[in-house]
Length: 219
Image (cartoon, rainbow, N blue to C red):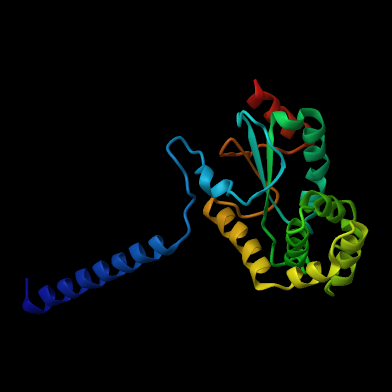
């Protein structure tokens, strides 16, 4: 082997090592699902102390978590199933809602902030209902639907001065962003995404599929 050949091979090996190192660094920077052994997502990522609960089971046996976008048509399609579960099981199941606004939906983040502003006055569930019951009215409009959401707040009898302030507060946007970051850490890439007792439900296609999964978990 000539000296030039040895130098060429050495240079090639060095380039391979550098590229491998860069790939390793890039992989470390990529978000990874916060899973535990067995494939379940860490409960601390799915449900925070300040996460919004539509119902709470004292025994904590079954917890259903939904990452949603209020402007998402598929989330609106899943909404009746969630209502059915709440009506059927009541406090036998904990139902948790997390924000996950999709950038392509022009009013999704604003709607999430409206829900959070209502939550600051103890009315999250009522605003959740307003937003989904009226999605056809405000959804998929390019212009900000601020006045519409203010109207829902008035309907609920909220303190409007506080609601307006909270709607635009950096803390409200940060709260929405925190939910979305948890969703990304849990492997959420679209909405709605459901987790039942820490495991993502990947085969839910109909309202009955979701109810059946909860039935099975309740035993």
